[in-house]
Image (cartoon, rainbow, N blue to C red; front, top):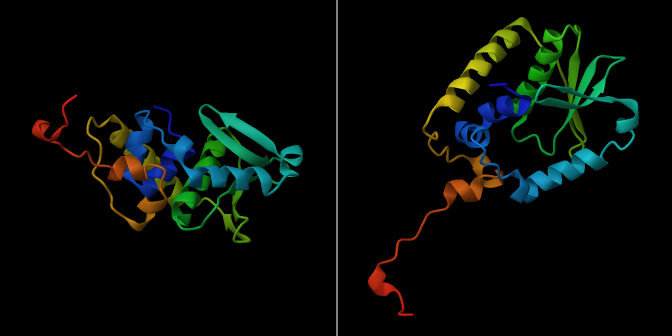
Length: 178
């Protein structure tokens, strides 16, 4: 399995979300929140596409990389799950290091909040991310979906309807005749 920044992000948000995503159950296309995030990403810094590079390494796509200053820019809608965003960005830095690019830093950007955070990778972070890759693989290879998290973040998750839907059972005797 090829671990991506999205996997690392989901690992820090919800193991169930990670497992569903890895197993091909994708709900992002039905989510207004995800759509808003994409719009913010596309419209917040229109000049970026001409100044910075998009890099693809395997299944990992880094949207904005300033190769002159060695800075990865990651744009997010909200800072509610900022730790997950930070680990995703640190993972991108680690991946670039694995490909021989040293001295990379990152900037987490929340344009709606007008907030930026500089992100650097420490030796402890590298060890933690290597362990996180192993955790992603363990969760992904499990045959059983992890249990429902039932957290505040669930309400804005693209998988909310999937996780919180329940089937209503009906007795056949209660059905109207055809």
